[in-house]
Amino acid sequence: MWADRLVRDLYAEICKIPLIDPHSHIDPRRPAARSLDDILGYHYYTELAHSAGMDKAPLAAEASPRERDRAILNHLDRIDNTAQYGWFLDICRTFLGFRGERVTAADCDALCDAADRIMNQSDWESQVLARTNVEKIFLTNDFDDRLEDFDTSRYVPCLRTDDLVFHLNKPEVRERLSQATAVEATDANLMREALAILFQRFTQRGAKACAISLPPHFAPSPVFPEDLSTALGELFRGEADAGSRAAAAHGVFWMLAELCREFKLPFDLMIGVNRRVYPEGVHQGQDLFDQRTSLLQYAELFNRFIDVVFPISVLTSGQNQELVSYSWIFPNVVTNGHWWYSNIPTFIDRDLRARLQAVPKTKQLGYYSDAYKLEFVLPKFNMYRRILAQILADDFVRPGVYGERQAVDLARLLLRENTQRIFGV
Image 1 (cartoon, rainbow, N blue to C red):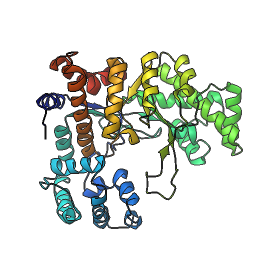
Image 2 (cartoon, helix red, strand yellow):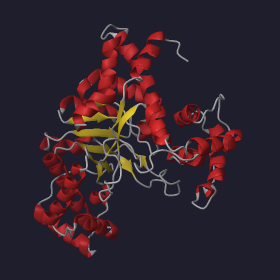
Image 3 (cartoon, rainbow, N blue to C red):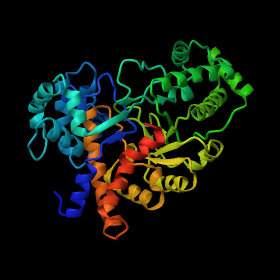
Image 4 (cartoon, rainbow, N blue to C red):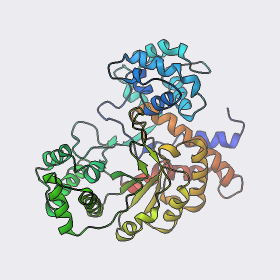
Protein backbone atom coordinates (compact mmCIF):
# COMPACT_ATOMS: atom_id res chain seq x y z
CA MET A 1 0.00 0.00 0.00
CA TRP A 2 2.75 2.42 0.96
CA ALA A 3 5.56 2.90 -1.55
CA ASP A 4 6.94 5.78 0.48
CA ARG A 5 8.49 4.96 3.86
CA LEU A 6 8.33 8.54 5.14
CA VAL A 7 4.62 8.89 4.37
CA ARG A 8 3.93 5.49 5.91
CA ASP A 9 5.77 6.36 9.11
CA LEU A 10 4.10 9.76 9.41
CA TYR A 11 0.69 8.20 8.88
CA ALA A 12 1.36 5.58 11.56
CA GLU A 13 2.34 8.27 14.06
CA ILE A 14 -0.62 10.49 13.16
CA CYS A 15 -3.01 7.58 13.75
CA LYS A 16 -1.78 7.37 17.35
CA ILE A 17 -3.15 10.85 18.11
CA PRO A 18 -6.46 10.57 20.03
CA LEU A 19 -9.10 12.32 17.95
CA ILE A 20 -11.50 15.08 18.90
CA ASP A 21 -14.19 15.25 16.22
CA PRO A 22 -15.58 18.82 16.17
CA HIS A 23 -18.72 18.18 14.09
CA SER A 24 -21.01 15.20 13.63
CA HIS A 25 -24.69 14.27 13.39
CA ILE A 26 -24.38 11.28 15.69
CA ASP A 27 -27.31 10.45 17.97
CA PRO A 28 -25.66 9.96 21.38
CA ARG A 29 -28.51 7.69 22.46
CA ARG A 30 -27.84 5.34 19.54
CA PRO A 31 -24.39 6.31 18.29
CA ALA A 32 -23.29 3.06 16.67
CA ALA A 33 -24.83 1.13 13.81
CA ARG A 34 -26.92 -1.96 14.55
CA SER A 35 -27.23 -3.25 11.01
CA LEU A 36 -25.79 -2.90 7.54
CA ASP A 37 -28.83 -0.78 6.76
CA ASP A 38 -27.60 1.81 9.26
CA ILE A 39 -24.39 2.03 7.23
CA LEU A 40 -25.82 1.98 3.70
CA GLY A 41 -28.61 4.34 4.75
CA TYR A 42 -26.03 7.15 4.95
CA HIS A 43 -27.16 9.67 2.36
CA TYR A 44 -23.97 9.38 0.32
CA TYR A 45 -24.85 5.82 -0.68
CA THR A 46 -28.55 6.35 -1.31
CA GLU A 47 -27.94 9.49 -3.39
CA LEU A 48 -25.04 7.99 -5.38
CA ALA A 49 -26.97 4.80 -6.09
CA HIS A 50 -30.06 6.81 -7.08
CA SER A 51 -27.96 9.06 -9.29
CA ALA A 52 -26.51 5.94 -10.93
CA GLY A 53 -29.95 4.54 -11.77
CA MET A 54 -31.45 2.95 -8.64
CA ASP A 55 -35.19 3.39 -8.18
CA LYS A 56 -36.31 5.14 -4.98
CA ALA A 57 -38.81 2.40 -4.08
CA PRO A 58 -36.33 0.38 -1.93
CA LEU A 59 -35.70 3.54 0.14
CA ALA A 60 -39.32 3.76 1.33
CA ALA A 61 -39.82 3.29 5.06
CA GLU A 62 -41.97 0.20 4.51
CA ALA A 63 -39.31 -1.54 2.41
CA SER A 64 -37.36 -4.44 3.90
CA PRO A 65 -33.98 -3.25 5.21
CA ARG A 66 -32.19 -6.21 3.65
CA GLU A 67 -33.81 -5.64 0.28
CA ARG A 68 -32.88 -1.98 0.51
CA ASP A 69 -29.27 -2.99 1.19
CA ARG A 70 -29.39 -5.43 -1.69
CA ALA A 71 -30.66 -2.73 -4.05
CA ILE A 72 -27.85 -0.37 -3.08
CA LEU A 73 -25.23 -3.11 -3.34
CA ASN A 74 -26.62 -4.03 -6.76
CA HIS A 75 -25.53 -0.56 -7.87
CA LEU A 76 -22.21 -0.63 -6.04
CA ASP A 77 -20.29 -1.54 -9.19
CA ARG A 78 -21.37 1.84 -10.62
CA ILE A 79 -19.97 3.83 -7.71
CA ASP A 80 -16.92 1.78 -6.69
CA ASN A 81 -14.70 4.52 -8.12
CA THR A 82 -15.79 7.00 -5.44
CA ALA A 83 -14.27 8.03 -2.13
CA GLN A 84 -17.51 7.00 -0.43
CA TYR A 85 -17.08 3.43 -1.66
CA GLY A 86 -13.62 3.52 -0.07
CA TRP A 87 -15.19 4.45 3.28
CA PHE A 88 -17.63 1.55 2.99
CA LEU A 89 -14.89 -0.92 2.11
CA ASP A 90 -12.87 0.30 5.10
CA ILE A 91 -15.89 -0.23 7.40
CA CYS A 92 -16.48 -3.73 6.04
CA ARG A 93 -12.86 -4.70 6.57
CA THR A 94 -12.34 -2.99 9.92
CA PHE A 95 -15.61 -3.79 11.65
CA LEU A 96 -17.29 -6.66 9.78
CA GLY A 97 -14.37 -8.96 9.04
CA PHE A 98 -14.61 -8.68 5.25
CA ARG A 99 -11.49 -10.08 3.56
CA GLY A 100 -12.29 -9.74 -0.14
CA GLU A 101 -10.77 -7.26 -2.54
CA ARG A 102 -14.08 -5.64 -3.52
CA VAL A 103 -17.60 -5.62 -2.09
CA THR A 104 -20.26 -6.73 -4.57
CA ALA A 105 -23.97 -7.49 -4.51
CA ALA A 106 -23.09 -11.14 -3.93
CA ASP A 107 -21.80 -10.18 -0.46
CA CYS A 108 -25.16 -8.78 0.70
CA ASP A 109 -26.40 -11.64 2.87
CA ALA A 110 -22.99 -12.35 4.39
CA LEU A 111 -22.45 -8.70 5.28
CA CYS A 112 -25.98 -8.29 6.65
CA ASP A 113 -25.57 -11.39 8.80
CA ALA A 114 -22.16 -10.25 10.04
CA ALA A 115 -23.52 -6.82 10.89
CA ASP A 116 -26.50 -8.29 12.75
CA ARG A 117 -24.17 -10.49 14.78
CA ILE A 118 -21.32 -8.04 15.45
CA MET A 119 -23.11 -4.73 15.79
CA ASN A 120 -25.62 -5.99 18.32
CA GLN A 121 -23.01 -6.93 20.89
CA SER A 122 -23.69 -5.16 24.16
CA ASP A 123 -20.34 -3.36 24.11
CA TRP A 124 -20.25 -2.54 20.40
CA GLU A 125 -20.23 1.22 20.94
CA SER A 126 -17.19 0.90 23.22
CA GLN A 127 -15.45 -1.33 20.70
CA VAL A 128 -15.93 1.18 17.90
CA LEU A 129 -14.78 4.10 20.04
CA ALA A 130 -11.64 2.22 21.11
CA ARG A 131 -10.76 1.09 17.61
CA THR A 132 -11.34 4.58 16.26
CA ASN A 133 -9.22 6.22 18.98
CA VAL A 134 -11.68 9.07 19.35
CA GLU A 135 -11.94 10.86 22.69
CA LYS A 136 -14.76 13.35 22.12
CA ILE A 137 -17.34 13.89 19.40
CA PHE A 138 -19.28 17.10 18.93
CA LEU A 139 -22.99 16.72 18.23
CA THR A 140 -25.62 18.68 16.31
CA ASN A 141 -28.42 19.31 18.80
CA ASP A 142 -31.78 20.88 18.05
CA PHE A 143 -32.46 23.85 20.29
CA ASP A 144 -35.08 21.85 22.22
CA ASP A 145 -33.10 18.62 22.39
CA ARG A 146 -32.98 16.77 25.72
CA LEU A 147 -29.42 16.95 27.02
CA GLU A 148 -29.77 14.96 30.22
CA ASP A 149 -29.71 11.37 28.98
CA PHE A 150 -26.25 10.91 27.48
CA ASP A 151 -22.60 11.29 28.44
CA THR A 152 -21.72 14.89 27.59
CA SER A 153 -18.06 14.31 28.44
CA ARG A 154 -17.85 11.99 25.42
CA TYR A 155 -20.60 13.43 23.23
CA VAL A 156 -20.26 17.22 23.37
CA PRO A 157 -23.49 19.21 22.81
CA CYS A 158 -23.62 21.92 20.17
CA LEU A 159 -26.58 24.30 19.83
CA ARG A 160 -27.80 24.15 16.21
CA THR A 161 -29.83 27.23 15.37
CA ASP A 162 -31.04 26.90 11.76
CA ASP A 163 -34.68 26.60 12.81
CA LEU A 164 -34.50 29.69 15.00
CA VAL A 165 -33.15 31.85 12.19
CA PHE A 166 -34.85 30.50 9.08
CA HIS A 167 -38.00 28.67 10.19
CA LEU A 168 -39.70 30.82 12.81
CA ASN A 169 -42.49 31.33 10.29
CA LYS A 170 -43.53 27.72 10.99
CA PRO A 171 -46.01 27.45 13.87
CA GLU A 172 -44.43 24.19 15.06
CA VAL A 173 -41.02 25.86 15.46
CA ARG A 174 -42.50 28.74 17.45
CA GLU A 175 -44.35 26.23 19.63
CA ARG A 176 -41.15 24.27 20.24
CA LEU A 177 -39.37 27.46 21.28
CA SER A 178 -42.18 28.35 23.67
CA GLN A 179 -42.17 24.86 25.15
CA ALA A 180 -38.38 24.86 25.57
CA THR A 181 -38.15 28.27 27.23
CA ALA A 182 -41.62 29.07 28.66
CA VAL A 183 -41.36 32.35 26.74
CA GLU A 184 -43.61 33.53 23.93
CA ALA A 185 -40.94 35.41 21.96
CA THR A 186 -43.21 37.92 20.26
CA ASP A 187 -40.83 40.89 20.44
CA ALA A 188 -37.08 41.55 20.52
CA ASN A 189 -36.75 41.60 24.32
CA LEU A 190 -38.68 38.36 24.73
CA MET A 191 -36.70 36.71 21.93
CA ARG A 192 -33.45 37.62 23.64
CA GLU A 193 -34.82 36.24 26.92
CA ALA A 194 -35.80 32.97 25.21
CA LEU A 195 -32.46 32.59 23.43
CA ALA A 196 -30.55 33.34 26.64
CA ILE A 197 -32.46 30.53 28.35
CA LEU A 198 -31.35 28.15 25.60
CA PHE A 199 -27.71 29.26 25.87
CA GLN A 200 -27.84 28.89 29.64
CA ARG A 201 -29.25 25.38 29.45
CA PHE A 202 -26.82 24.25 26.76
CA THR A 203 -23.71 25.64 28.43
CA GLN A 204 -24.73 24.15 31.77
CA ARG A 205 -24.85 20.77 30.03
CA GLY A 206 -21.39 21.19 28.54
CA ALA A 207 -22.13 22.71 25.11
CA LYS A 208 -19.02 24.13 23.50
CA ALA A 209 -20.36 25.73 20.31
CA CYS A 210 -23.31 27.31 18.56
CA ALA A 211 -23.72 26.40 14.88
CA ILE A 212 -25.79 27.21 11.82
CA SER A 213 -25.97 26.26 8.14
CA LEU A 214 -26.43 29.30 5.91
CA PRO A 215 -27.72 29.78 2.35
CA PRO A 216 -25.68 31.62 -0.31
CA HIS A 217 -27.83 34.76 -0.29
CA PHE A 218 -27.61 35.39 3.46
CA ALA A 219 -25.62 38.49 4.48
CA PRO A 220 -25.73 39.09 8.25
CA SER A 221 -26.61 42.57 9.44
CA PRO A 222 -28.01 44.08 12.64
CA VAL A 223 -31.70 44.92 12.93
CA PHE A 224 -33.11 47.74 15.07
CA PRO A 225 -34.95 46.29 18.11
CA GLU A 226 -38.22 47.95 17.14
CA ASP A 227 -37.99 46.51 13.60
CA LEU A 228 -37.24 43.06 14.99
CA SER A 229 -40.20 43.37 17.38
CA THR A 230 -42.50 44.28 14.49
CA ALA A 231 -41.26 41.32 12.42
CA LEU A 232 -41.59 38.85 15.29
CA GLY A 233 -45.07 40.09 16.12
CA GLU A 234 -46.15 39.52 12.53
CA LEU A 235 -44.57 36.06 12.52
CA PHE A 236 -46.40 35.00 15.65
CA ARG A 237 -49.68 36.33 14.27
CA GLY A 238 -49.13 34.51 10.99
CA GLU A 239 -49.05 37.80 9.06
CA ALA A 240 -45.38 37.97 8.03
CA ASP A 241 -44.41 38.67 4.44
CA ALA A 242 -40.98 38.00 2.93
CA GLY A 243 -39.62 41.26 4.29
CA SER A 244 -40.68 40.48 7.84
CA ARG A 245 -39.28 36.96 7.64
CA ALA A 246 -35.95 38.36 6.45
CA ALA A 247 -35.89 40.96 9.24
CA ALA A 248 -36.59 38.26 11.83
CA ALA A 249 -33.87 36.01 10.40
CA HIS A 250 -31.26 38.77 10.44
CA GLY A 251 -32.28 40.03 13.86
CA VAL A 252 -32.25 36.59 15.49
CA PHE A 253 -28.93 35.68 13.84
CA TRP A 254 -27.31 38.87 15.14
CA MET A 255 -28.72 38.16 18.58
CA LEU A 256 -27.16 34.68 18.48
CA ALA A 257 -23.77 36.24 17.77
CA GLU A 258 -24.25 38.57 20.75
CA LEU A 259 -25.06 35.61 22.97
CA CYS A 260 -22.04 33.69 21.69
CA ARG A 261 -19.97 36.63 22.86
CA GLU A 262 -21.75 36.72 26.21
CA PHE A 263 -21.47 32.97 26.81
CA LYS A 264 -18.00 32.72 25.23
CA LEU A 265 -19.03 30.14 22.63
CA PRO A 266 -17.51 29.83 19.15
CA PHE A 267 -20.09 30.32 16.41
CA ASP A 268 -19.69 27.64 13.71
CA LEU A 269 -20.80 28.98 10.34
CA MET A 270 -21.40 26.43 7.56
CA ILE A 271 -21.79 28.65 4.54
CA GLY A 272 -23.28 28.21 1.10
CA VAL A 273 -25.87 25.43 0.95
CA ASN A 274 -29.00 25.71 -1.19
CA ARG A 275 -31.77 23.48 0.12
CA ARG A 276 -34.02 21.35 -2.13
CA VAL A 277 -32.31 22.08 -5.43
CA TYR A 278 -33.39 18.59 -6.52
CA PRO A 279 -36.76 18.02 -4.79
CA GLU A 280 -37.15 14.56 -6.34
CA GLY A 281 -33.88 13.39 -4.86
CA VAL A 282 -33.53 10.93 -2.01
CA HIS A 283 -33.70 12.03 1.63
CA GLN A 284 -30.75 14.38 2.31
CA GLY A 285 -29.74 14.13 -1.34
CA GLN A 286 -31.45 17.30 -2.54
CA ASP A 287 -29.10 20.10 -1.48
CA LEU A 288 -26.32 21.71 -3.54
CA PHE A 289 -24.15 24.81 -3.71
CA ASP A 290 -23.59 27.58 -6.20
CA GLN A 291 -20.96 30.28 -6.73
CA ARG A 292 -22.83 33.31 -5.35
CA THR A 293 -21.45 33.13 -1.82
CA SER A 294 -18.66 35.42 -0.69
CA LEU A 295 -17.24 35.82 2.78
CA LEU A 296 -17.45 39.55 2.13
CA GLN A 297 -21.09 39.09 3.12
CA TYR A 298 -19.80 38.28 6.63
CA ALA A 299 -17.20 41.04 6.94
CA GLU A 300 -19.42 43.25 9.11
CA LEU A 301 -20.11 40.30 11.42
CA PHE A 302 -16.41 39.44 11.76
CA ASN A 303 -15.54 43.09 12.44
CA ARG A 304 -18.32 43.69 14.97
CA PHE A 305 -17.67 40.48 16.91
CA ILE A 306 -13.89 40.37 16.94
CA ASP A 307 -14.05 38.61 20.34
CA VAL A 308 -16.16 35.71 18.98
CA VAL A 309 -14.37 32.87 17.23
CA PHE A 310 -15.97 31.85 13.93
CA PRO A 311 -14.95 28.38 12.71
CA ILE A 312 -15.92 28.53 9.02
CA SER A 313 -16.86 25.67 6.71
CA VAL A 314 -17.35 26.25 2.98
CA LEU A 315 -18.89 23.91 0.44
CA THR A 316 -16.59 24.55 -2.50
CA SER A 317 -12.90 24.07 -2.96
CA GLY A 318 -13.03 27.20 -5.10
CA GLN A 319 -14.13 29.22 -2.05
CA ASN A 320 -11.27 27.83 0.01
CA GLN A 321 -8.86 30.54 -1.14
CA GLU A 322 -11.22 33.19 0.18
CA LEU A 323 -11.53 31.33 3.49
CA VAL A 324 -7.75 31.05 3.67
CA SER A 325 -7.43 34.79 3.09
CA TYR A 326 -10.00 35.71 5.75
CA SER A 327 -8.37 33.40 8.29
CA TRP A 328 -5.01 34.90 7.32
CA ILE A 329 -6.27 38.42 8.15
CA PHE A 330 -9.07 38.14 10.75
CA PRO A 331 -7.92 36.90 14.19
CA ASN A 332 -11.38 35.45 14.87
CA VAL A 333 -11.83 33.46 11.63
CA VAL A 334 -10.75 29.80 11.74
CA THR A 335 -10.71 27.24 8.94
CA ASN A 336 -12.89 24.27 9.84
CA GLY A 337 -12.75 20.87 8.17
CA HIS A 338 -13.63 19.87 4.62
CA TRP A 339 -17.39 19.99 4.32
CA TRP A 340 -19.68 17.82 2.22
CA TYR A 341 -18.92 18.38 -1.47
CA SER A 342 -15.35 19.43 -0.63
CA ASN A 343 -14.79 16.22 1.32
CA ILE A 344 -13.14 14.47 -1.63
CA PRO A 345 -9.42 13.57 -1.63
CA THR A 346 -8.52 15.80 -4.57
CA PHE A 347 -10.19 18.84 -3.00
CA ILE A 348 -8.88 18.07 0.48
CA ASP A 349 -5.33 17.78 -0.85
CA ARG A 350 -5.48 21.14 -2.63
CA ASP A 351 -7.37 22.95 0.14
CA LEU A 352 -5.26 21.55 2.96
CA ARG A 353 -2.00 22.44 1.22
CA ALA A 354 -3.20 26.01 0.81
CA ARG A 355 -4.24 26.27 4.46
CA LEU A 356 -0.97 24.86 5.73
CA GLN A 357 1.02 27.22 3.52
CA ALA A 358 -0.94 30.38 4.39
CA VAL A 359 -2.91 30.17 7.66
CA PRO A 360 -1.34 30.20 11.15
CA LYS A 361 -1.20 26.59 12.27
CA THR A 362 -3.02 27.42 15.51
CA LYS A 363 -6.07 28.62 13.54
CA GLN A 364 -6.95 25.41 11.73
CA LEU A 365 -9.48 22.76 12.77
CA GLY A 366 -8.18 20.03 10.53
CA TYR A 367 -11.11 17.71 9.98
CA TYR A 368 -14.50 16.59 11.21
CA SER A 369 -16.42 13.45 10.34
CA ASP A 370 -19.92 14.89 9.74
CA ALA A 371 -20.88 11.28 10.55
CA TYR A 372 -24.29 9.94 11.48
CA LYS A 373 -22.91 6.69 12.91
CA LEU A 374 -19.69 6.08 14.82
CA GLU A 375 -18.42 3.58 12.27
CA PHE A 376 -17.85 6.38 9.76
CA VAL A 377 -15.48 8.38 11.96
CA LEU A 378 -12.55 6.01 11.35
CA PRO A 379 -12.65 5.68 7.53
CA LYS A 380 -13.27 9.38 7.00
CA PHE A 381 -10.45 10.44 9.32
CA ASN A 382 -8.22 7.77 7.73
CA MET A 383 -8.79 9.42 4.36
CA TYR A 384 -7.79 12.80 5.79
CA ARG A 385 -4.79 11.40 7.68
CA ARG A 386 -3.40 9.72 4.55
CA ILE A 387 -3.58 13.03 2.69
CA LEU A 388 -2.10 14.92 5.64
CA ALA A 389 0.81 12.48 5.90
CA GLN A 390 1.61 12.93 2.20
CA ILE A 391 1.47 16.74 2.45
CA LEU A 392 3.63 16.81 5.57
CA ALA A 393 6.19 14.63 3.81
CA ASP A 394 6.17 16.63 0.57
CA ASP A 395 5.90 20.18 1.85
CA PHE A 396 7.55 20.08 5.27
CA VAL A 397 9.88 17.16 5.99
CA ARG A 398 11.63 16.62 2.67
CA PRO A 399 12.30 20.36 2.09
CA GLY A 400 13.73 20.54 5.61
CA VAL A 401 11.09 22.90 7.01
CA TYR A 402 10.23 20.44 9.80
CA GLY A 403 11.66 17.25 11.14
CA GLU A 404 9.41 14.21 11.42
CA ARG A 405 8.60 14.94 15.07
CA GLN A 406 7.64 18.54 14.28
CA ALA A 407 5.44 17.31 11.44
CA VAL A 408 3.57 14.98 13.79
CA ASP A 409 3.24 17.83 16.29
CA LEU A 410 1.59 19.89 13.53
CA ALA A 411 -0.82 17.04 12.87
CA ARG A 412 -1.62 16.95 16.58
CA LEU A 413 -2.56 20.64 16.45
CA LEU A 414 -4.92 20.02 13.53
CA LEU A 415 -6.55 16.87 14.91
CA ARG A 416 -6.70 17.61 18.61
CA GLU A 417 -5.03 20.54 20.30
CA ASN A 418 -6.58 23.37 18.30
CA THR A 419 -10.03 21.93 18.96
CA GLN A 420 -9.25 21.65 22.66
CA ARG A 421 -8.11 25.27 22.87
CA ILE A 422 -10.66 26.94 20.57
CA PHE A 423 -13.68 25.17 22.08
CA GLY A 424 -12.34 24.82 25.59
CA VAL A 425 -12.68 21.03 25.88
